[in-house]
View 1 (spheres, helix red, strand yellow):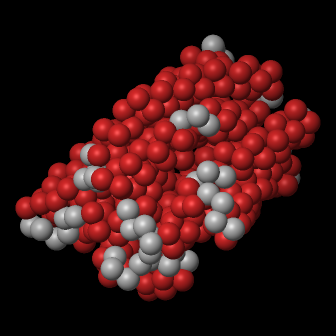
View 2: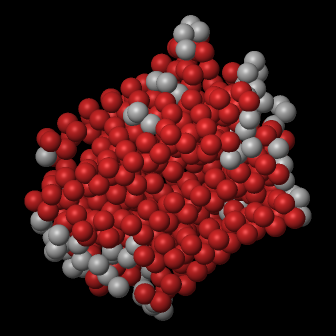
View 3: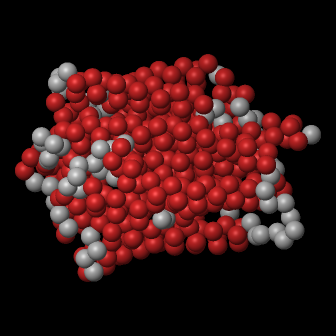
Amino acid sequence: MKHDMTVGKEWKLILLFTLPIMAGNILQQLYNIIDGIIVGNFVGELSFASVATSGPLVLMYLALAFGLSVGVGITVSQYFGAGKDDELPIAIDTALILLGVCGLIFTGVGMILSPHMLRIILNVPEEIFPEAVTYMRIYSAGLFFQFMYNCIASTLRGIGDSKATLYFLIVSAILNIILTFIFVITIKWGVAGAAFSTVLAQAVCATVSYIYLRKRFPFIKGGKHFDIKLAKTMIKLGLPIAVQMSLISLGNGAMQRLVNSFGVTTPAVVPAYGAAVRLDALVFVPMSGFQAGLASFTGQNIGAGKLERVRTGLRSSLVMAVLCTVFISLCYYIFAETIVGFFGLSNESLVIGTSIVRYFTFFFWILACNMMFSGVLQGAGDTVIITLATLTSLSTRVVLGYLAAHFEILGYSAAWMPVPLGWLFWATIIYSRYFSGKWKNKAVAGRLSHESN
């Protein structure tokens, strides 16, 4: 079923659309967290550190898949909002081919270059390097499925069908958890078992979602399946987001490298930081969910020429996202030590991990606001400015972190304390762009129709 977001109460439409996305994101984060808990408790703290320190590379691949899929979602949502249903099948086939090829390329890149990226980019300590290489090579084997799923999910969200993606993720999450128990605890494959379970779950999720999509948009024999103009538009819209999110991942990699350097003298900081990063990812769930919902809402309403609804939708999303974020932050601050301890951390690792989690609880609301304004710009197709804002935020945290470490100002906390300041710079750029109103002239559907005439 397609969901028209151009009529009705804005807050209700966004909330109902967002809830399945958030539930799906929670499932994704939970099975990442459960993987970490199982590895940390049944394999060991060093093995957990090897998986955790690979996190920036995992996020980089996810960023590329999700970012390129954003271009698909923007195009589909604006086509739907403009009533161009007859052109949707061509757009969908174009997206599947485009993202499928990208997935195959990055699968090869990941399997071949993982050792070099772990050593050069992350400076992974020698005691955990072999297991980190094993994990990343196996994980990379599933990148094709990751790219395909994100493409299909963005397509379905573009037409307002966010519930289907939730059902696929439920199957994937349950399967991943079951397989992790079997491979890690029963068969005792260690970090390799955790990676295998993720790849198999992704393969099943991608396959099921593809079958569902084909029932909605059947393959038309002899029809047009790849439109080069559409592909270029999707790349143009999605690449800035992919670059933005990849740079965030590389920035996280730079900070992980900094953490790893502190691990030489304070080994406890590596697993502590890894646990905190996994837990902080849960706080992003309402933010990213509302951002995705607002982006689809914006895309459809811009396509329909209803800009006032976009402004109202932004105000509603800001209230909902900030309230959710504050509530989660409060729970984290109170129960930080308990939840960090779930990863099998103790003593100094537990103390450091708890302090990191509690530190960020004071600032997450800033990020929530940033992501809502970014959601409007994303749905409008004004994605370059989002990349610029992210680059500014990223460079701020990396430069200040390394300077603080060099001059021994903040100790190992230099790896995370400058982050909120970067978020403030991001806010300045995003808010300025929104209130300038320049994003209103970025509609995709009308531009493509004009170019084709």
